[in-house]
Image 1: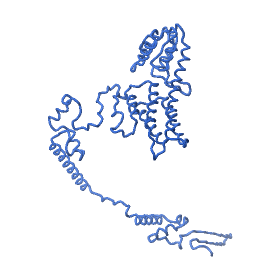
Image 2: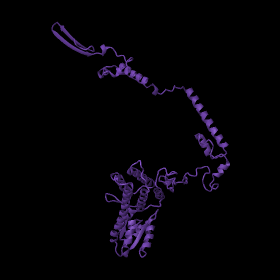
Image 3: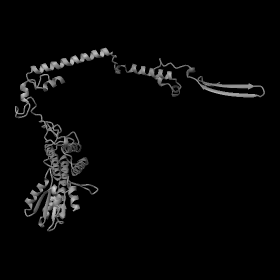
Image 4: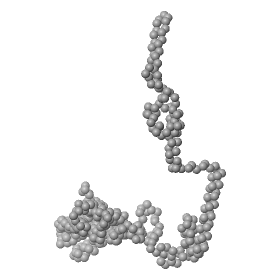
Length: 435
């Protein structure tokens, strides 16, 4: 007594006689179904009734009852979200699918034939009147429809090399060239212009004209020396900041920072930046990021602060090269034979500083830039009494015969003391050490 209706308690007693006397006692306990053990009916339950079912009752459900509960939940959800359900397409037989595909092919054939007819009626085989209506019309318009169109495609028939129907404002495409199979895995060189640099007509990227001009010089190879690239970038940043007009609805520091990052990204896309260029960009960004701290200053004063930072970097670069030249010139004495490779601004200053001594200079040069020629011309103009020997890279071992000092330029110095130089610097240093 006192047990719930879904539970049962049983007690059994057994007694036997014979040669022996046995006594047995048994106790049993069982759990039945809720609601008097009857199966639950979910067909008429609402969502609130389903949510009211306890966890114990859910655990006690059989597989059939769980399936019925799941089906009821699905039915309630479909009734509440019937407008969101997608209608299922009826299944088609094989014959119906074949008939549908045949009808689609016939419709495509009619569209293609109609586009060709319109292109011929237009009288110009290069541009059809319905060229923009479909892909078939575009293909038909791209093919010459008469002998005159084929003749005009010859280079001699059109001296300017421009399609009469093309947009005159669009940038010209780069000339096609045949790449050798042996070097097909290497990046192929193409002359840089506005089209290859990704500059659309109208300047959608809002780049300063000086930045655009400098990026094209980077890409075309007009400025290759690392020192020259750094100084040119600083001058371009200075022009950008001078002509910058801060907006009224945005904070000056954030807007100017975006302009500088966009300009630096464009220069990097034209040619990957050197380590020194990356360090300079981080230094300028730090100054621009701290502009909100100067809330009491005007926009002109904030621009002047950024310009001062750019000028300070430029002066520090020049002073560092001059100090290197003074220290290095003291290592050269009379009668020395000095060898250098390529061109570096600091090395040029060093050799000019040491011109007071009577020494002989050997310049080793290499393709493809032949930067050693620029160094030879500069030293001939500044130091006419200096004896200079110009040697190609293949004659390096022969040129090292009388050399007792080697001066090499570096593009960057790493934190671990390693130096980064142009290609061939390590070979020159290794050959000099072996001598």
